[in-house]
Image 1 (tube, one colour):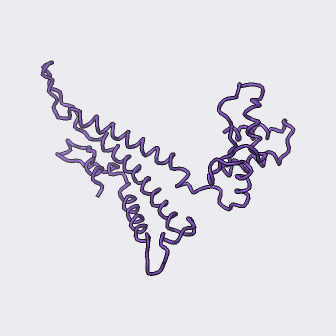
Image 2: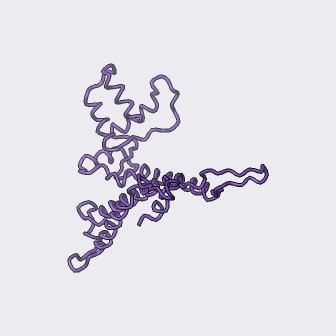
Image 3: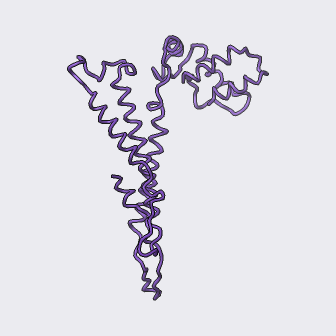
Length: 240
């Protein structure tokens, strides 16, 4: 963020720098090569010269820099390493694990909360309130909320399966991993993990078929028109 903000300021044209300086920072950002800047040292004024000095230090090949290929290291080594590297960024299925897996974890927590509430709720009809002497005919039995939540859960699980299969492909495919094909020394008669990847691909296709919402427009009228909208939550839970 600091480098992006600095580029934005320099690009205004009022800082007396050349286009080469801006391009160098942009190239570093695009390659995910980031100078080490101490957390402490900013005063929130005076141009924040201390943090900016550390930023410039990395761009000059001094100090420390971080790169996705070698982590933290000497800035000169990182710059030289990436100068001859034809792949400076990993694929999304590797780089975006926190963003994708994270939201799936949130999805699971969200659905768990709904299901926990529903299984601990009174869902009979009518509802008998003995302390008040009332009997009320309502609709707490309707399973719409957990049904929709289970459709949502299926989408999340599919994303995990999809990402995982792609990582397996990148691992067993020598064109991506630069490892022996299918992780076996002697190919040909030895399949290695080829069939394991085929199984993963098949399972992803299965989750693709299951991810279509089971509750969408699937309500059919029963009981002579009295039960004219149902959740089909059972199908949302089973998915087979």
